[in-house]
Length: 402
Image (cartoon, rainbow, N blue to C red; front, side, top):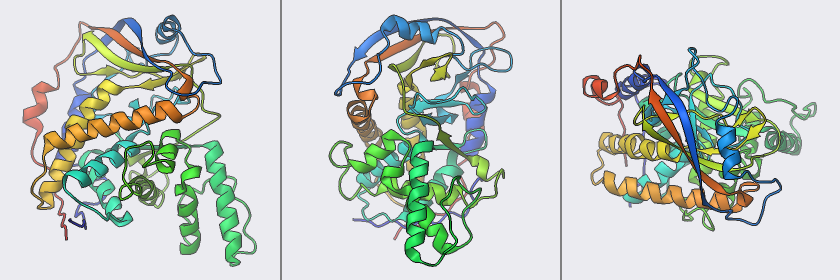
């Protein structure tokens, strides 16, 4: 068994060679047009029912071809994105029509993707007993490896669960007896409280499992071994990563460059959605890219799942990151094929659990939607033209394992 202890020499936000490479993907994106959508029933519902009337295949197609379904660029063209350098938001039908940050949707978003990666890294490298400090080091390393202002790291909660956290903060502060004039918070402070005791209370409340506004994250924390494919040794990884996120993001200066490396979202209202829809690009235009679909638009709400993009991201970026991470740590025996296969398996297990147990998703059918794509005449060069030219080496970081 190995224990893990890491320290990075680069400060958070350093633009690594890979981050610069991934920026090329966005710069060389081809201009494409959506020419049609084919929707087919895939499976489900997998759970006990839904409080909403699900969409039919025809209604999903109508919604995807309707007002505001596809994010548009400044020229009015649909935005097609490379999976390798796009932020991964959550499969949450409350996702707004804000396209200031390009994003795909997967269960839990970036934070769940990285938590699964850490889990599988521990398995293939036979690492146990990871601490919260170890998890923080992994987050910082991942940020240095691929996160930029243009591709921030995503984590979300919602208004209801954040108010649960406010209640918990108020209760815990009162229990200390040290702050007689403290009143219940009504809004999240701009930055971490300077008082260490207050800061610790806030972190406890913000990371508590029942205060998680992301249903996928909340269920993973609540039923890690029962439904989400984790062992008892692994069940602390996601909670520790949520805590690490807050400790990485919240102390930064408001509206600073460092803070813009994170995409922290507080979603409004109840969890709604009329279908679970998996997106793929049928081509022939923009091969390797996928359209950015807006979950909530024009009165339509769907749980959008970019599974095809996720598979590429996991196989290339997540596997590549942990391969580099092991190399920098001087750890031999990392098998990228085994890592990728196990990550794919765990991802499927956790997706299935959320489809089965999260309301109202548990009562919705799952559809596949393939988007017909044609390239515009002004298409530019593809990412392959830049790939070999742009690799200059990994981040200048030093990691040691004990």
